[in-house]
Structure formats: C-alpha cells, structure tokens
Image (tube, rainbow, N blue to C red):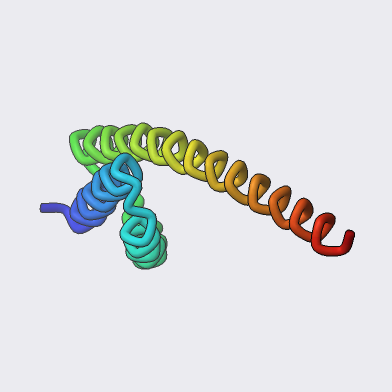
Length: 107
C-alpha cells in the first residue's frame, strides 16, 4: 500500500477512536489519542509534501479519508463542546456557593 495512504488510514483510525472516546466521555483517553494524532500529523507533513505525483485512485482514497476525518472531528467537537458547557455550569455553581459561604461567614 502507498505510504501516504497508510498514514492517512492510521490517522483516520485514530480519529475514529477519538470520536468514540468523546462519545463515551473518556476525556483522558481522548487527550492521549489527540497527542498521538498530533505526532502522526507531524510525521505526515514531511512525507505528504514529498509525494507530489499520485495516482487518481490514491488521490480519491486520500480525499475520502480526509472527509471522514473532518466528519469525525465535527462529532468530537460537538461532544467536547457539550462537556465544556457542562463544566462551565459546574464551575459557575461552585463560584456562587463560595460567594454565599464567604458572605455568611463574614457576617
């Protein structure tokens, strides 16, 4: 198999794992996978730039993998955004509770 496609296949698999981790709320695992993803992208930057001439089938396969990764990324973002909103609500409630405690402790 073409090494460029192998890299994109590996990255696509990572994105699928990230999507599953986000859907299950496994935030630590998601962060580990994101680190692996970043490392792979760095590796791919050099390899992909060297591969200028590719066959049509390879180009189409690469484009399909990129579309899948973008779709996975959108789902990951929706899960993480909802989690971040929930975290902000919890932090806001905690701050309010601390303010009430301070107000009554001082009075």
